[in-house]
Length: 285
Length: 213
Image (cartoon, rainbow over all chains, first blue to last red):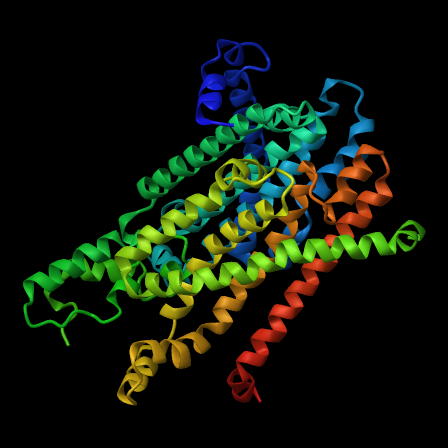
C-alpha cells in the first residue's frame, strides 16, 4: 500500500463510470443523506419546537437522547431483518436503511430544536408581544433567530451521523460510498477500501464545513456574539482607563454550540443592543 | 433467552474485549485531553485552533477511520490497536472541549482566592481548578463512554472480536435472537460504564453532597 497505488486507483477511468463509479456512489450517498434529513426534519422540527414552546412532553427529548445508546449497527441489522422481508421489491434494501438513518437523525435534530426554542427568554417573547407582534411574527422574527444556532448544531451532528451510518449501511446492501469499503473487504481489495474511506472522510468534512459556513452566515450577529465583541473592543479603544475584563474572552466566545451563550441571558441580544448603543459606557469599572 | 444462557461464556468474553476496546481509549483520551483542554481554557486563540482540529477528527466516520489507520500506523487491519487509536481520537475530540469548558466554568473569585493563598499556576490547576471541573468533565466522559461502546461494535464489520460480532453473525445467519442479545449486551455495557463514571465522579466531589445535605 503506497500513495502511488492510491493515486492509481483514483486516476483509473474505470473507477469513474457506471454504477460502481465514484460519481454515482457519491450521488447515491448524498441522495440517502438528503432524503433522510428531509424526513427527519419534517418530524423533528415541529415536534421539537412544540415541546420547547409549550414545555410539555419533555420526556420525548430525554427519551430520544437515551435511545442514542443503542448501537447503530445493531439497530441497522434488527430493522433490516424485520422490515426487509415485508417489502417485495428492489426497495427492500433501501427502505430499512433509510428508516434506521431517520431514526438516528431525529434525536440530534429534536434536541437541537427543543433546546433552541427553550433558550428563548420569556422576557424577549413578552417584549415582542408588547411591540404588537402576532404569534407568527414572534415565532419567525424572535424565536426562530434565537433558536437557530442550537438548531444548526443539531443539524450538523445529525448530518455527520447520517453520512457515517449510511457508510455502514452498505453491509445491509445499501449503495453509496460504503460499497467500496464493504465490497473491498469481501474481495480483499484493500486499496479500494482505503480509497473509499478517503472519499467518505472527505465527504463528511466537506458537508461539515458547508454547515459551519451556513452557521456563520445565517446566525444573527446579535446572537452569535459578533456584535458584542465589536462593541467591547470599541469600548476598550475609546476608554483608555477601562480594565480589560478578566473573563471577557469566555463571555464573548463566538461558538454558538454553547447553550450558555444564548441561554445565560447576560449575553443575549438585549445586551448586545445596549452595548452598541453606548459603547463608552461599557466595561468601565 | 435460552440462547443467551447457552452462550453466556462467549458473551462474557466478548463483553470483556468490548469493555477493553471502549474503556482503555476513555482513559487514554482523558489523559491527552486534560493538557489540551487546559491550554484551550487559558489561551482563547489556541482554543479555537484546538477545538477546530479535534472537531475535524471527530467528523471522520468510524468505519473509514478503522480502515485508514492501518496504513498510517503501519499495523495490520485486524490489529485491535487500530480500534484503540480510533476510539482515543474520538474521545480526545469530545473531551478537549469539555475539559476546557469545565476549567473555564470555575468561579473567578475562587481562582483569585487560590492565588491569594499562594497557589502557583500548576498547583492551582491540580488542587482547585481540576477538582471543581470534575462534574463537567464527568458529564463529557459519560457521553464519550456511551458513544464509544456503540462505535466499537462497528469494528466487527472488519472482523475485530467484541460484542458487535453477535450483530454481524446474527444478521448473516438471519437469526434475530443473536442480534437482540448483541444489542442488549451493548446497552448493558454502556450502562455499566455510565454508572462507574457517575460513582467515581461522586467520590471525587464530596463537597457537592455536603451542600445538598
